[in-house]
Image (cartoon, rainbow, N blue to C red; front, side, top):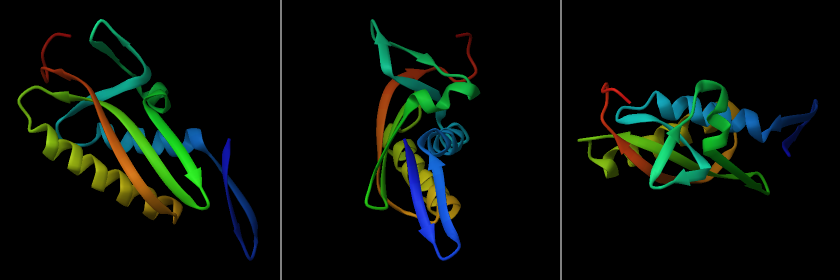
Length: 122
């Protein structure tokens, strides 16, 4: 599925996987985030960390009439204030996508899938 943008020069199609990768890359650069988790897979209360090539598996992109709704599945570091990390991720992802794509971001929803010790053996 692709997002279509029309302007005076023609049509632009942006894959939702591209949008998901931009959002995922922005998330993992945020303070307090250990990584992305799969939106489909939580086994026995343990969320698997996704690698760079799989960020889109931790992001769900919905678009409706030029507005985007983003669902992010993240793993945060132990000892950080989860609400602050989530709010920071929301505002950073919203800003990055609006500046990159020039579209209105309706919502950025955060789903914390786990807590991990930062820098410890995993």
